[in-house]
Amino acid sequence: MLLTRSLLLIAAALALSGCDKLPGRSGPAFDKAQLEAALDPSVGGPDTCVLVDDVKTGSELYRYGAQSVCNRPLAPCNTFNIPLTLIALDDAALNPAEVRKWDGKIQPYKVWEHDTDLAGAWRTGAAWYFQRLAREIGPARFKQQLSAFDYGQGAVVGNPEAFWQGPAAGGGLFISTRGQAAFLRKAALGQLPVKPQSLKTVQALSADGMRGTAALSDIGASCPSTADDSRSVSWWVGRIQGPDRDLVFTVSIESQNPLPGSEIRSRALPIFTRVGLLPST
Image (cartoon, rainbow, N blue to C red; front, side, top):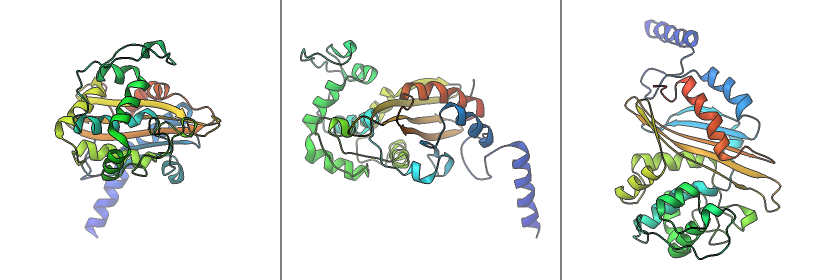
């Protein structure tokens, strides 16, 4: 009886404070209702999924969107740069400092029409660089590693140089928003079958600075999700790591005209700070 009364008092206190942290659960306290209310008009809708998971415990701290939306298979677009780079680094097929030569072909963006190293390719999203890495890795190695990562279907599906970029590019690899969160958590815990240095390199490539005492690493991406370009998918995924929190987050929107990944970041980042997922100072 005393235990029941104590639990009821704790629940009541949490309800009054708007705090969404439970006794024994790691991670920051944050206002779930405030987060929901802020996401709705900013990045929300029936085609949006937002997940925030605790790295240490694996607990789902927050979900926006229906389970069916969060479990829906989607093209990973350039978020696939994470596993692609990990595999290339781990196979010693990639020296991060090596400047690779642009072949002179016209690119969709002028910023891609330059020689570049790994950091530059990550910064600009130069598709030719990652396509070249994919050719060097090859379908057999991709199948071995993606299966070990439990990433999507675990194999190259479709165009071997763009199988992560959706059906319009001839790609057929898909991963759900929940699958992205699970993959990022494994990476954060060092549970992927790759060298620790490979993980450290990718962590540095995706670093987005400090927010107070917490380090933010993230990547945004967009690509067509249907063969006829009638729908697209956009992503913003990453990790928030600090002394009092270690979280992975995944945001996806799949619709006829979703916000670009960079715009999702611009809108969601201040919301994460306002509700306490990210420290403000």
